[in-house]
Length: 193
Image (cartoon, rainbow, N blue to C red; front, top):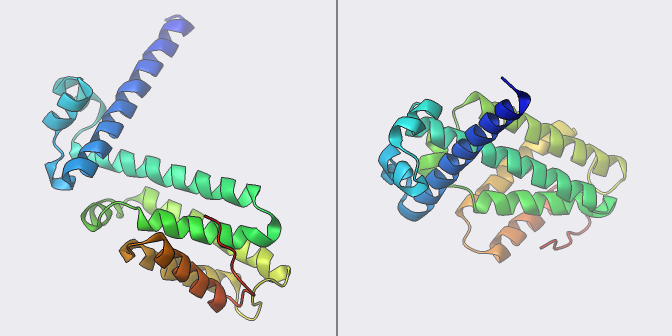
C-alpha cells in the first residue's frame, strides 16, 4: 500500500478513536457513568455501533481510554507549569494545579472503576517521582524542610492534596495547598491561580 493511503487510514482510525472517547466523556459529564452505552456513543458521534466495536470491545474500554488520555494530559500540564515557573514558585504552582485537577476530577464511581488499571499505577509512579524531584529541588534550595526524605514528603503531599476532590471552592483548595506547604516547612505560599 502506498504511504499516503496508510497515513489516511491511520488518521481516520485516530479520528474515530478520539471522537468516541470525547463522546463518552461528554455523556459522562451530562448523564453520569451509568448512562453511557455503545448506542449512546454511536448516536453522539454518528459512528455506527458495528464500527465502534472494531475499535473498542465495550464501554469500559472506551472509558479506560478516556481516563488514560486525561492522565497523560494532566501530567503534561503539570510539567508545563513546572517548566514555566520561577524556581521559587515551582512547588506552590505545581501543588495548586494538582489540587485543582483533583477537585475537578471525575466522580467517585468512575474513579473507582478506572483506577485499577496498570496505566494508573504507572501514572501514579510518574506523578510521585515528579513531585519527589520537585520537593528535593526545593529542599536543596532551602525553601522547604530537609529533615524528611523527599520520597516521604511526596507521599504526604499527594495524599493531602487528594482531599481537594471533596472541596467546593477554589478558595478551599488554595487553603488546602497553603496548609500542605506549611507542613513542608515552606516559608509562604504564593497564590498561582
